Image (tube, rainbow, N blue to C red; front, side, top):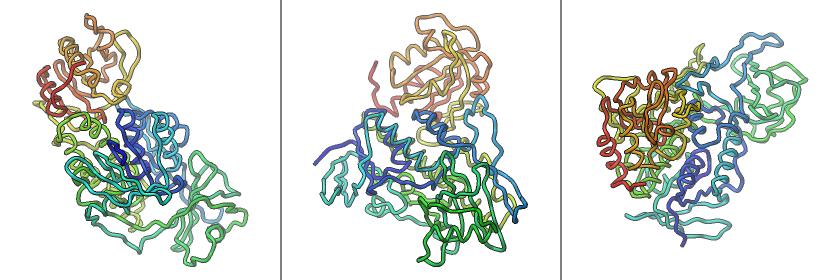
Amino acid sequence: MTDVDVLIVGAGPTGLTLACELAVRGVGFRIVDRADRFFGGSRADGIQPRTMEVFADIGILDPILAGGDLGMVMRAYKGDEVIWEGQMSEPAQPTPSVPYPNVWFVPQFRTEEILRARLADLGAHVEPSTELTDFTQDADGVTATLVSGGTPETVRARYLVGADGGRSTVRKRLGIAFPGETDESITMFFADARVDGIGHDHGRIWQAGDGGVSVMPLAGTDLFVVVALPPENEDEPIRDYLQRRITEFSGRDDVFVREVTWHTTWRANTRMAERFRDGRAFLAGDAGHVHPPTGGQGMNTGIQDGYNLGWKLAATLAGAPARLLDSYEPERMAAARLALDLSTALLEKHKRGDDDAHLRGPELYGLTLNYRGGLLSRDGRTRAGEVMAGGRAPDAPATTGDGRPVRLFDLFRGPHWTLLAFGAGHTHTVAALNDRFGPALHAYTVVRSGRPAGEHAAVDVVVDVDGHVHAGYDGADGALVLVRPDGYIGLVEDAGTFDQVAEYWTALHGTPAGR
């Protein structure tokens, strides 16, 4: 028997994000996947703005940007004539509070490669060809059976996380219902293929009658995503089928499907588990919720499940009270329900043939998702502000106390909490909080110009030269804003004090240790 703090079952984007979050915090874990090779398809390729912020915090933003693009213009053809042209959304410019305002398109297999590389940098790796076959749990942990190469192994873990997809073994073993529906009348065939005869400058739709085919360049690759109705003849080779459909609908004999690298048949499947936790076992990603692909919500919601759960597991393993882990299920179930509603509404638009069914708006970006009124949200403001406890903490440019340019997201990055204390009057409060709770908490005094005197002033001060920090947080002098490790606001007070922060912190973390 081997012992580990956390056993993660499933090494897709959700499991990998969780593993990175645990690794950076020094938690002992194993991440296993029953597949004998890593996933090689495009599948979920749209990364929403909030997930881009998650990836920036994890440390993989640069390779994600290098591996994708903003998405291509689509053109619908009738013969050689362009009868329609459009995009899902118009690219937006970054703002002080939103540095990544656009959906970024990266094939799922590339996203997973980048996450695995980051995990390797952190000293961990995925164990492929390793299947969870059974487990039991008690008050202190989970005893699981893993099988690799026909050899069983018993693993004792303090917590188990099922990130093992819509057919989750973890969910089924827990007996958690997975209500929803699968509409077999709505199916679509997706394939990644090398196609000669057309360029990568735009996507193409060829349609005739009730049928059609689309061919879209796959970001960062020499591939195209080909979408058509599923083949009726299961014996027809996939390459031949796609070639026949493209030739039929385009009327062109110079477009050649050279190779198919991956394909799948999608069905309208909308489900959500009745709960995301059972004792010491958790569900994350598709194990807890499956979405229509409309709106690009499924993978993004799963990634944020892992991001939410990782820091909470680490803190609980370090001795935090149960309340912290108790917050995972209500926070993420509400998020999954919202994502399902958005995806389903878009699917209905497609079924009706609405003219705007292809459009995607900011409601899908994840930037307005919040945990207001939740277990970890304490709002002491006497009036509504730009931000509230439970809401996303916005970014803003500023300078450090010694004059270096910095962004709030730079200060937030890492496994710690961050306190923004508005006004020079908080200088001593910030110093005391850093002395008491650091390095788990990084506290800063936010001032409009100059910097307060004192030994900590150069490192513990944020100078809001252009006023974007104050504007983004509605930060009047005296206010305190405490930001969680996952970039959401835990505590807001109009006239905050050391004792208010200490009380909140102790309720979540237990009796704090000093530096």
